[in-house]
Amino acid sequence: MGKKLRIGVIGTGGIAHPHARGYMSHADAEIVGAADIVPGKARAFLDEFGLAGAKAFDSAEELIRNVEMDGVSVCTYNTTHAECAIAALEAGIHVLCEKPMSFTVAEAADMVRASRRAKKILTIGFQPRYDRMRRKVDELIGSGALGKVYYIQSGGGRRRGIPGGTFVDKAKAGYGCLGDIGCYSIDECLHAVKYPRPLTVSAVATDYFGKNPKYWPGADDFDVDDFSVALVRMENDVTFVFKQSWAMHADSLGDTLWLGTEGAVKIKNGYDAGSAPSRVMYYTDVNGMNVDSFVLPSVPFDSTWEPRYSDMFDMKVWDFCDAIIEGRPAPVPGEEILYNQAICDGIYRSSKLKKEVEIEIPDISV
Ligand SMILES: NC(=O)c1ccc[n+]([C@@H]2O[C@H](COP(=O)([O-])OP(=O)(O)OC[C@H]3O[C@@H](n4cnc5c(N)ncnc54)[C@H](O)[C@@H]3O)[C@@H](O)[C@H]2O)c1
Image (cartoon, rainbow, N blue to C red; front, side, top):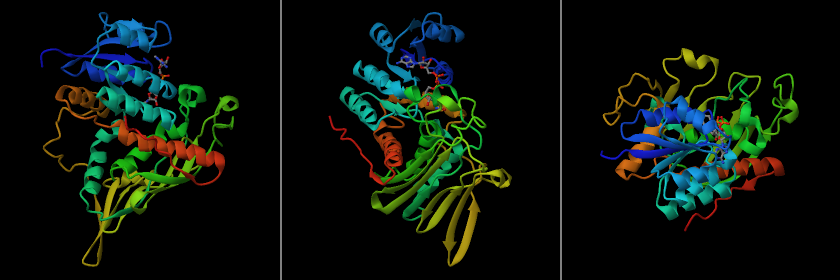
């Protein structure tokens, strides 16, 4: 490739660092600018990476106005993803936006419409999609080996893992645990079955650990969720049971599970999971026999897997760059993650109203 992709980074805090490393290790990309609302922070960030020639600004608008760019990473707080992503898209710049896509589902829809109008990529930063075992799980379920998948449950969860910082500041994060790690669980469970349309949800979100000074030093100011559970009804009679926690008195909220009419896949979680030959199990029936198999991590990966792709944070950034260069669609399309965001929105509304609610999916036609 002749000219390198010109890249900007908006928001230069924690996650911007792996983004920068990803761009700097891509042969056809260069970082030409950065912006952060904390004065001096963008300059310090660029200098940390030895990017003296790249330009620093105190706002996304100034960066977008003053520097010619092909793509940007939006690495700001959740509540400012939409404004930064839309400003870039409207200026004709491709966007890799960190997860969760936004705070409100209305913002997420605005982002999708902006990308459609501009005909530019809007991809969301779910790097676990590039995890090798996750790809095997997606491939196994995508093969149809499970028959009709009728029940999905998320698993895992943290025993003591309230992250602090801007993650527990409602004005900046919007969501707590749900927006931090819940959106990953939703993506893991639903991407494997190609995101059926969610219809209704009955949910509860709580804050028993964040509000307790015994478990969290900032308890007085804690105003987001640290646990949530939901029953989501989806199109084609798929039931999704979601749960996620930042803190609890257990090793796990259970296994991640896809139940189908011909087979099932389970990702084992908790203390015992590590001692098994693999955390991923496949169950089926052969001539009336119950057959259980471990999906081994040592299984060779398919020929389309490039060996240089070893780090999923790099891969997320490289795939964004390659999609721009090759004219491919967004690797993790905003349209798809709109459903993820709509489920998060429904979980909060249902919990607040203490009843089942319809999941609202805005019209994204332009
Ligand atoms: N993919 C992952 O594994 C992963 C990991 C951590 C965080 N994240 C996500 O990345 C985002 C940022 O998280 P973080 O830990 O880096 O937070 P952070 O607080 O360390 O950094 C965010 C930065 O954005 C800046 N900022 C906020 N609004 C801005 C605006 N309008 N314009 C320019 N700069 C702005 C802040 O000043 C701050 O420096 C969050 O959405 C979070 O969910 C993703």
